[in-house]
Image (cartoon, rainbow, N blue to C red; front, top):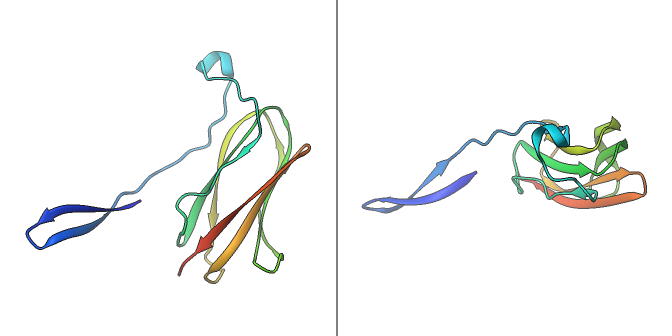
Length: 123
């Protein structure tokens, strides 16, 4: 995360804060978490990004889930998730060390649910 802080007599300075995420799985009763009722694919963060970003998603029930990344021409460039998962909230890191700058799309499919979002890689 980048931000601007006022604190020098010349004006503003740029600072960087590292944010860490971890996979969240749960036994709802044990952790006292609210029940997940819908599939959700969240916008990646940060966006734009370089060289990696985090994609968060949730599933209300167990099942097969896939998350794939496509370039602007619709060609698949990465498969981030392709497996059976129990109900819960998850995060996956997309590392782009071998891709060029540009706009990409990521798509989640699980059961009858499909959603996609746009992400921007800036080198």
